[in-house]
Length: 168
Length: 121
Image (cartoon, rainbow over all chains, first blue to last red; front, side, top):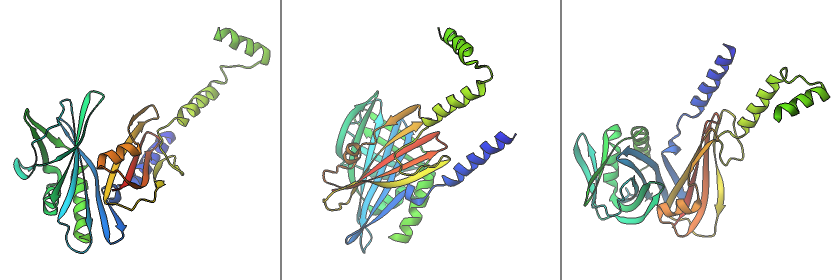
């Protein structure tokens, strides 16, 4: 009984200490003449995994563009994506095209394709507003990959929204 | 063979290995715990670790790109990932690195993650 209570005490201490900080989701770094914002990578799962992060700079006015970098990790090579669609409640909220492929490589049994694209800041805010309901679809010539499960996205999006509301 | 040597040790040093069972269990546990999940960290906590620190800085100007890479360890038994500077730089298309930081997290030595942040242009 005593051992069990010690284990429970340690577990609760670890869980309390590991409560997430906002820096786990978004980092703001002061640079000469601007602030650099980095929204940490978040992974959505489904037909493989989709990992995305956002970077943008901010000085006085609202940023115009945000750099979205994302990786599509799947058993089929997604080296030639046509479009990336963000959906909420089955309705598309943002469609993105004209990516620049950064690399395509095979790791173990899966293919990793990484892309980079500039998106308007407003689109980032729309994506963040989806919370847990976000579904991402990638399209290429052979069909679509769907990514709709994420443990972190809902919480990350809500925290990032609060920070951006205050900072931008 | 092992039993023969244990018998010999018992006779020579008059040691009762049955009574030393707890000692052996403690020794095995100590050896196992030294290989618990852990990452880069100047300071560590047995229960919880969340440490950030620098790895490198260069003369290059601070840019507007950030790249990350990470690796994970479970119980110090399974370790996966690529937490290299090269991988982080590649993920953001960084060719001129200004500085590199790390972030280590560990919970009860069960799960540990190391994340590398590379900044540059």
